[in-house]
Image (cartoon, rainbow, N blue to C red):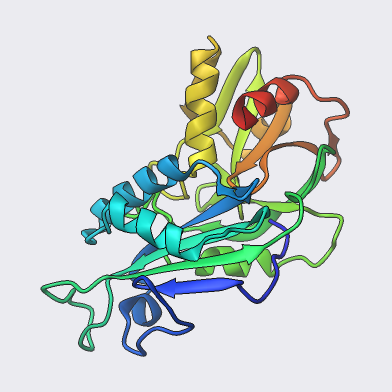
Length: 274
């Protein structure tokens, strides 16, 4: 969520040191690609297998030729040594191609691995203050859940505030359903149940979200993907946000609604960070 250093330490494009891609790359021209943002902790990419699995799933949804795991592992080895703490971004585009929307055949996909040094994960420990964004997400089931390169909705939503006391914005869809944060997934704790918005129509299904749902279920918790509106969100016993960079953080306030004390979030944070 917090801004990261502007200049990457190292960048590989198709396995070679580079700082640019072709002007006609479809990722640049059309947002035709997917990406993962990965926290580096103790010099290693956190949840690397999970991110590679989600990358492959998103590529399959878009009909992209996903690089195989061995090749991505080789790229990672070339970019090492990684910083003790940092951020790794893995991008796959459909590659260079002729003008026009029709996907080229055969594909010549571009893979980009970029590494930044960073400090500790943003927002340690304390509860976050958040807001509701004016922008409403469009529904598109064909893209729902995918972390594709066209993130203009998120860009516009994040441009809505400059107040440093506000850590995140909540996104609703056009019917008023709660979907996610601008840069995170959302969970609530209500009556002993862990709930997260359904992402069947829009939104990004993050790796941290999937891990938390699995680990909480293994702990015997009731975990539900469901639809709810803002009014229902405000009646939750606790609200939490997840992403791959900071893990899990609880929400302390949303407008006039205050959640003064953590309930289940410390246990969930332990599960996710184990």
